[in-house]
Structure formats: structure tokens, C-alpha cells
Image 1 (cartoon, rainbow, N blue to C red):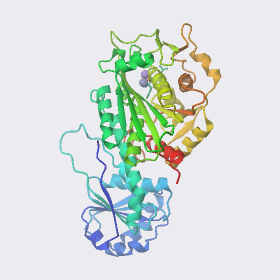
Image 2 (cartoon, rainbow, N blue to C red):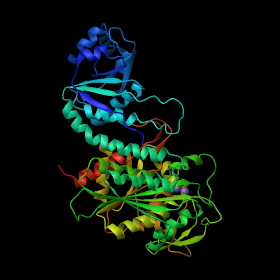
Image 3 (cartoon, rainbow, N blue to C red):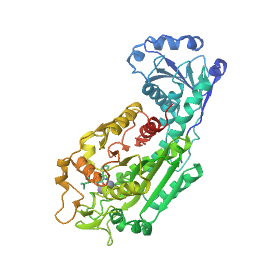
Image 4 (cartoon, rainbow, N blue to C red):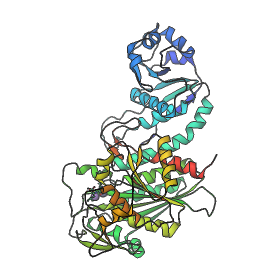
Length: 490
Ligand code: BES
Ligand code: MN
Ligand code: ZN
């Protein structure tokens, strides 16, 4: 896995700051006054901090943004970064400040002077998340990442606050690595192998192979993988950190390791992006890793359906009728609407096997979702207002965009089939909603459930606040937060 950069919290030591040969980040409040803790550094640099603080350049920075001075006089550092940040910043802005430091750090060793800022841990979290770099397939010199030392007035308290963040960051990195990985490497088998490795950190991992899935009656899921040389698999990850016997919360993920569309083949342009079609499974896996790493006091089961959607002589055809584990039959009008077929069976399996207290599925399910909300928000569909509100609150707290869309019986007429119980597409109008209505057929009314369509947010072509371009790991933080709020009071 892409390693997390090492971050240490230490007490402030101005002598070693002045002698530090790498890079140096300091914080200045909006207004630009040189704080008491930076007076010495300002003197050493012959007033550079004061002049910057009084400049238009500094005035124009948004909170969390930074300006850097190269080869500053009077100190040994190669570059001095001044980050605009309030004395008591909100969480999101502190994380953005940390992200600005990650961009500044490069391969150098970095010292951050956080002084008495109460958000030192959040600054470190932003630095860690934005510092992610997927270079598994780059040959040539790979610079060892630099170290980070954060100087704070209460380093022990900062480290204590940072520990769970580091655990969640490891989950985010795990998700990002899975999503960034190309499909010739991350086959269904390799995916299952990487998940099985998590037994070493305390998860119970079970892999169900094709004969086992056939025995369970998962005809909808198995139909999708028929054209692939990679065998379909369902992987179950269990974390038992809560009270014994308490019903688990279930997380369910679409894991299409590559989506060609199948016989309903996608156009060539942009098809390479469909390596991310296992994004839902990636997030579920990352959350399970985070829970295990921070030893969450909750019972959670993660279930992912790993398949590859390929055209082939053995592939499923448009017009085929498949029987789901639930028993309902589905007419496969379009083999490219495969995610809902995978989810139908694992949603049902989750309920039959685990009787979950609640259930959230994640999937890069529809292009229609991207048209509706773009890349800023994932779509939230739910049969339960309380659970939906709790999730939206967690997502807002973690600054991960999420927006609820409606569901309703009236949409069901769009997925009526002439010859089976339902068909797998509802046409272009409300394409993201008809997909959600389809999934709802496989959710028992009494089970609180959310469907998250992450097609627009799992992978970005531009850098975002806390991630470089590529896989974002969207949802790992929000779901970890939700589980904390629901199951781990105090
Ligand atoms: N994996 C795609 C959805 C997708 C599109 C994800 C763009 C990420 C970015 C999904 O399997 C799919 O192909 N959906 C079809 C459904 C249609 C045939 C009803 C779509 O959205 O076009
Ligand atoms: Mn598809
Ligand atoms: Zn797909």
C-alpha cells in the first residue's frame, strides 16, 4: 500500500528551526500581524514576515492558502511558507492549510510551526491526505518522502487527537490505491487477495467463489461476470468491535473491476476510466480498514461484489432473463446497467445472512448521477429520513459533498418488464433515480437503507482540496464518522 508519510509532533525549538535546512511552514492570522511566537523568526529574516503580512499578496489569500518565500535571508531553510490561518480555525480550513503544506513540502523535510493552534492534528491530517501519491507503476528514481515535524505547544494532545485520523487516512489510502489500480493488475482475484490480507489487522474475511455464489442463487451477480476470464467473487469483511450479539451495520459495495459495458459495449473514448467502477467496493474496503486500525467499538460488516463486465461468447446478452437470490426475475435490457445486478444479490445476501441494523451501499452506478450533480456531490437515496440525515450530517462534518435525491413509487413504472418481474434500465429520464428504485426492490422495508451513487466523486481529473487528481477515497471519512456517531457515543 502507498505508505503514509511520517508525522511527528514535538515541542517548539526555535534553535533547530533556524538551523533547519529543508522547508519551513508557519501560520499567520488574517490581518497579517506577526504573532508573538514568530517574532524571533521575523527578526532572523530581517522583517520578511512582517512585510509579507502587510502586503496585498497576503491580504488576497483565502484562509488555508499560503505564500512561499524562497531562500529567505537569515535562516538555513530553502523555503519558508506562510499559511493564512485563524488562531481558532474551523476543522475544514485547518485541513486545507495542511494540504497547502503537502503541496509545498515536495520531497523535502518539513517543519511546521503550529504553536498553540488548537487544530494541529487537523493540519497534520490535511497534510497527510493531500500528500498521497500513487507511483506504484512509475519506474525510475523515486525520492523517499521527506519527514514532517509539527512543533506545537501541546504535542502530546495533538498526537492523541491525530491517532484516529491516521487510522482513517490509512483507510482512505487503501481505497485510493484500489481505485487507481489498473484492471490488468486489480483483477477480481487480486482484489480478493488484498482484502484477505486484512485478516492480519483483525478483520474476519471470507471469500465466496462462483460455486458458492451459484449455490446461494446469485443469478443476477453471476450473469454480469460470465464474459470474463476473472471469476466473480463476493468478499465479506467482519469487524466485531461492539457488544457481542448486537446487529451489525452493513456496508455494501459495487466492485466491477472493469466495465466495458459487456455486449452493450461502451464507446472507446474514456473507457479507460472504468477501472474505477469498483469504487464502491473500494470505499467499503477502506472503511473496514479504518475501523480495524482504530479499533472501533462497533459491529460492522462490509460486503463487496467483485466482477468484471466483458463482452465474450459466454457473456450475458441484452434480453436475457436472470433470477436474483431474492427470487425476483430481471430482464437484462442493457448489459451496461450491470452494477445494480451485482448489488441486488449482495444487498439481499447481507440482509438474509446478517440481519443488519442498517445498510448503506456505495456504487459508481450511473452516468446520470454525474449529469445531475457533477463532481461536487454524491447522490444520496434512502428509505429512512433519520439515517439519511445522520449520514448527511457526517458528510458535512467531514466536508465530503453529498446531496439527497427523491425516490418514489411513481418511478417504478419505468422499470416494468413485459416478460420478467422488472427490467434493469428505465431510460434516460431520472436515470439515477430509477437505478435507486431498482435497488430498493432488494431492500426489506424494515431495514433503514441508503444508496450512495458515487459515479461523479470517486475519481477526479483535477486536484481537490485533500487529494491529488485521481482516486479521492470519497466517503471513507463520512462513513467512519457516521459509525462513530451511531455506535460509539462519548
Ligand atoms: N459504471 C457505469 C456508470 C458510470 C458512468 C460510472 C460514468 C462512472 C462514470 C455503469 O455501469 C453504467 O454503465 N451505467 C449506465 C446505465 C445505463 C445503461 C442505464 C449509464 O449510466 O450509462
Ligand atoms: Mn456499466
Ligand atoms: Zn458500471
